[in-house]
Image 1 (cartoon, one colour):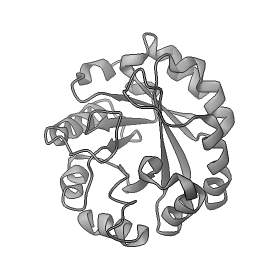
Image 2 (cartoon, rainbow, N blue to C red):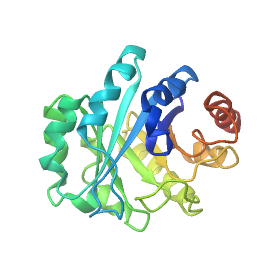
Image 3 (spheres, helix red, strand yellow):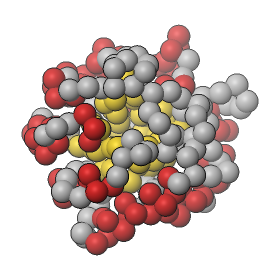
Image 4 (cartoon, rainbow, N blue to C red):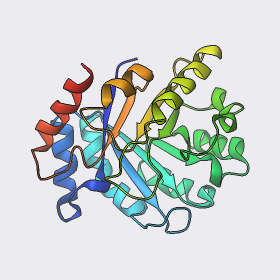
Length: 223
């Protein structure tokens, strides 16, 4: 499975969000990653379905995946709204879904791919029963809620364990997404561990270099 770059708009300049999304797409990002935070499950608040709907035409015109990460309590109540807004993938946390299979089933019945994720300290055993029903697993390599954090080193072993779990169940079509602290100097170990989708925010959107240069630098890190 080829490795894809997912540009996280959490670190983008929201005053020119559409332009920043287009810059990432033009630079070769295959995925636009959208973090939805409610100020309850995580200590920060971001955006809602209206913004997803606004950037959907840009992603759709380029054939780029719109990847929406729901860091919110009771995500079931907003799954239909984010689906209507244009999400191609909806990712939910095991910690917020007491009936995880039902939530995943709802997402897929609405015609959207389903992903699951878990906080860094949450055991991978919580994924064992849901793996056959999902399209991707997101490994959080920082504690969710804020951008520009440092990669948690033990995440690499966790990614490798997810890959083994999928191989043992013959679920190699399931993508392994990694989000948090990814930089050119650590993407090699992350990809070698099994990651297939690399989420990067501050490594792409910063004042050190252009979006194009930053994405190229990430790719050189694992190519």
